[in-house]
Length: 335
Image 1 (cartoon, helix red, strand yellow):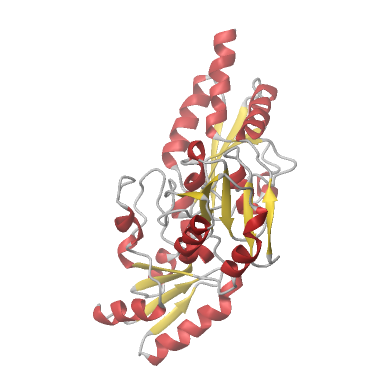
Image 2 (spheres, helix red, strand yellow; image 1 turned 120 degrees about the horizontal axis):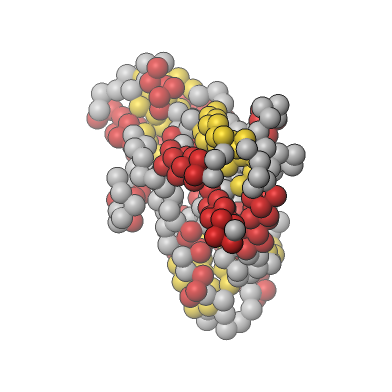
């Protein structure tokens, strides 16, 4: 697959019903099916396992929780004899470096939350400023109502620009914790964003496009505002860390063994850059990245070439993204 796929091509691995998936599995005459899902819907995973057994399939369930389709466990269930994997809860993930995600035997079944998000929008839309052009984005759980939300807002006189797909997403307007490209790609066309979902985690990603975000929150049952933010502050902090550690010799590069978080091209580029400036480079890999695992090696600073969100909660160890290493070139030119 390529990043230039059409929207239909990007999303054709996503299924809207379990019955659709079962129909395809029966057509392919599979015997054993793997199941994987996040913490919040584990009872649904068991329900689907029961239904599959009723249809004559054997099942194997991935015990560890998943945080996204970047961590599909097809290889794990294949070792257990499964012919295919149903990844429940998330849409298909596109690898930024175009690495093969082995889509042909993975069935993505997004979880759609049944909370009344449209009721919240209809009852509180007047909290959105008039005469604003709005970008419409959200999380997977509510994107099946994006068209209905757009039509409602336009009926109230708002100009609405639909979100695009991001670098990693397969659903228009969809925001991931690691990819708010759906919003950033249209930020120059809008005055603010309407976000379908809850919590601060994803809206904060959208706000980094430099525009405020109206969060249509079905849990809080009202619309609240995430203020405009900027990636500039975060980037300045990373540049400061590079400057602080520029004379240190030991640098680590971290990547993940998960398919969607394994960015080997980024690893190669970062390693080449650091070795250019005579750094001793050590490459680390693991499934889930915890700060505590990287203490004790004597490494001065780490470059995160895995999920960009993984190191944001680190407090003791210094880390930067690969793009922050450009500061080394700038410092070299100054010298």
